[in-house]
Image (cartoon, rainbow, N blue to C red):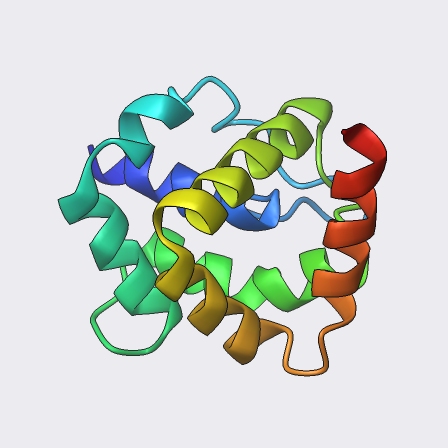
Length: 126
């Protein structure tokens, strides 16, 4: 279950562990994201890790390290599955966990650059 939760948070950024230069690893692409999002306890632990309010698993530490790169590169190293799952996680957090989503944005996107890109892309899809 820990691996599944790690993937959910990795999906938030559209990444798991990084492969040199080309793409993030796809070893977590088969995780059932809906199942992970449905487990509040596991999701909360990873959110606390990202916000530096709780301990991190090795996967959580890797996510914290890679999240800024994924945001700055607009997920350019993500696989297609990671992009789709990232959108699913983002939509879930925005609608079901808006407070945590706002805190993540404040921490990892303080200038609102990613937020602006995401909102523009979201409007194009609808």
